[in-house]
Image (cartoon, rainbow, N blue to C red; front, side, top):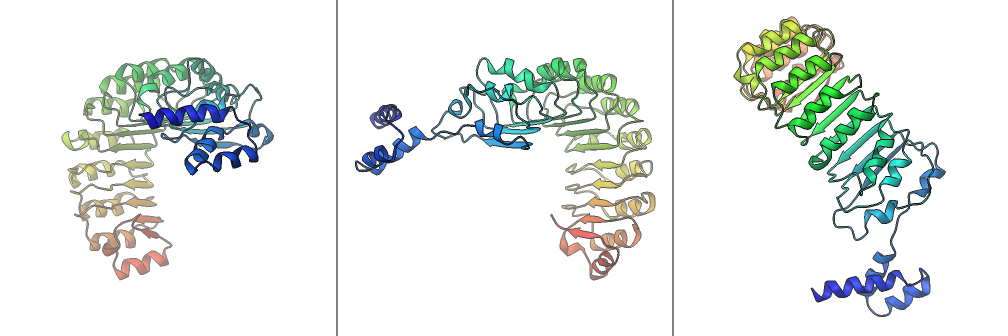
Length: 375
């Protein structure tokens, strides 16, 4: 405790020393510890240099959680000069960080914003400044920002009419997400919700009613959603939805006939991701593939009950299939993989374990220019 107090006092003293080589030399003569404290007290980073690069379009800032400097010392600038930035990534903003309002005020051309592991968008005044940068946003990505998701979504709903893509990973309350879906003024095209623990059929009904132009819908680990909610979506989005992901959603395994019904409604699907539904069986999946015969991309990674029967169905019903991911599917054997390579004329990429690729399959993959990986 005494050491920490002493260090803080020394840093306050060092802040008042001139930033000159002679001062650093004098401090270094005392001890290495003093020199380290002197350097940490003088370290600062200004973003005013961004103004000098009008062609700079993308900026990423990672705030170290154990860093000595306050974020405020990085961004607390008096200068107001609009940046040309179109993409901004911020990671690690905490509730006590100050001065971020300056950044928001000068990023009025932003098209893409990603926040990761952020507990705040700045100090007390920064949220009002944050509004200034959201008007023209087209893509927003919120990852592990539980404490601010509702606030950000509210500001987007109120102030952003250009948003076409939203990703929320591990965050957002039931009420906050529902309010955004019901009140947003944008023509949202892509919605990606990962670990939305409170997501239920009410949200899906709101999506069906208010977001009728969705082309991409991705849901991951949605344990409260039922077949009724998904079927409501399928009926509403039959003419627009081209990409669907239901990753680790137990409703896929739990409700018999769900996939068949979705397939009948979503006939223009191009991409389908059913990864990590471990108990999904061939019968349920193939009943969907019969209707979704325009698929170009199919991901079944981690579907442990799927067998070669599904691959035979793919080759028969999906003539446009270009990419397939069948990693971690122990029920699929080398013979089925070989059959798929030989019989899918449009195939260009396959993700599968190396030991399931026979010499014949590998030869034909080279001949047909199919990229086979185990990534």
